[in-house]
Image (cartoon, rainbow, N blue to C red; front, top):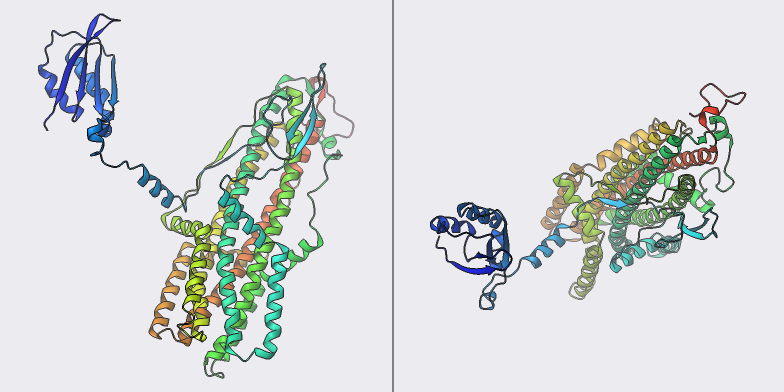
Amino acid sequence: MYAVCHVFSTFSSQHNQPTVHLLAHCLPTACRSLFDHFPSNRRQHVVGITAPRRHQRWRPTLPSTAMFIAKKLNLPARVYCSLSPTPASQSSRAPPTPTMFKHIIHFLATPGTKGDIQDRAPTQYLSKHFNQPQGKLGIVVKESDEVSEPVENVTGYVKHTKTNKLDRWLDAMVRASGSEPVFLVIVAGLAVWALTGIHYGETDNWAALISDIQAIISYLFDSLLMRQQLNGYEKQVRVSASLKSRIVSQKRMLRHVIASGRYRRASLREIENTSSSKFGPDLPSENWAGKVSNSFATFLGHFGTICMYWVSIGIWLAFGHYCQWSDRWQLYINSATSALMVLIFAFLANIRERHDKYVEKCIDSIFQVDSEVELKLRLLTGDSEENPAVVVPAPRINAIQRVIFYYADVVGTLVGIALLVIVLVVWIAIGPAMQWNDNWWLLIGTYAGLVGLIDGFVLRNVQQRLHQYEEAALDSAKLDDVGLSDEIGVPTPGKAVVNLGSINYRLSERMGRVCAHEATVILGVGVVIGLIVGASAMKWTTTGQLLCNIPPSIIESFFMMILITGHNLSEAGWRADLHNMYMWRLRLLSFVDHLEEGSEEGSEKRPGDAPDAVAA
């Protein structure tokens, strides 16, 4: 390679010695052979190598090159390297910067990733000099000889606010889709459709109408339910991180209290028999509407109900020969499963939103007690160190699961809704060309049915995987609770558990695990491809379109019931964990309240205490 180097000398006023500067317009490593013959009688203090910016890729080799030259010239090892600006005459010929392409690649590769999630519990301050965050506030008065200043601390649970306006708008749509008014409107619409069937039940358009409505509603709810699941995952992992954050501070301060030897700890009987006047003995209960919804969710997600569903499908198939396998016979089951799917979609969104609100109340109660424990410990120790930020590491996923998550992220954003709008516009635009016939009415149902079938498989897979990640994060927080319990010598209260041995639970859990496997999702995609091939062989006639409507509708209705089953199982475990964490924090608060001034050595056992009843 040809090397062109310019060598010139300057005068260093500091060292009264000349300095050699090398302007390398080529590979810096090519300068080595050039300076093998450099006069050795030249003595300089500093060797500098400056390369144009178009050679930024060679920047890592500049220090080694400068050190090589310094060694050859017997110079001190004080070197510097820099990049000179590109001349204006060459800037137009420079290749375009890859930054924009990197941003595009990053944008396209972002969906499907499950990165680290970091959060910290709000610190309970003792002085007024701090940055006030937004949230639920409690008034604290610092005990001192000076004038007491009230302190406003965040004591309850505060939702994480998203910075992107589009994300906030989509989340508002998710909350609206699960609201009671939307659910009642959909149920009323189904009732009106059923009543009109008394007069128009024999017409094909009446049967196709519910199929089209179901297709649009299902497509829309697929996107909203997917986003609802992703939001729930992030929220629960953040809650686990906040709990771990506060446990770290509580452990630190309790160690300080115990090591000081200034406080006497009460017996276990005293701790158990003392109830807090500030907090309730248990988590808040649901209202009557919530209890009714829970009962209906239990019925829909029960293993027996799912078996009844498939028995009904078998009865319909048994009448196929009697009805001569006609299009009318196919429309019967298409209408029934479409109406069922609309009901399940609306109910699933509503029950999830209702449960999210209730769980937030429970989490708020836990955070309130946790904040009280932290504040009392800070008053005892004078500790002002902030609660640390805790990072929940990203889960490890394989390549197939990454593709599934990628699809879920795309569906759960504005892209999925935008695709629905585009398809609806195209469908309406081709209506006059198809003379608004039965094939046109079934067309939107065909498209949404095929896409919805894939969405059903993906929804169940994502639900199961995210629940596993949530469980792992919460298990880490529960282990920290157990560690704190062992450290202070106070056992945890009796735990509420889910009946894992029931037949319904074992069968439902096994069935849900099979339906959530990655291979099942791949099988679903294969079924969709097979249906498209079959409809194409029938030249997309009414029978061909019904082929792409009925099997997806039957399978997707089944998967919606499985989604309710999975939600019921995960919700039962989540509520049991919340109950156990709340009861433990009440006991921890009682332990801190009973810390009294006095030497532990001087404490005596009270009459009636067991030998191990004194938590020492």
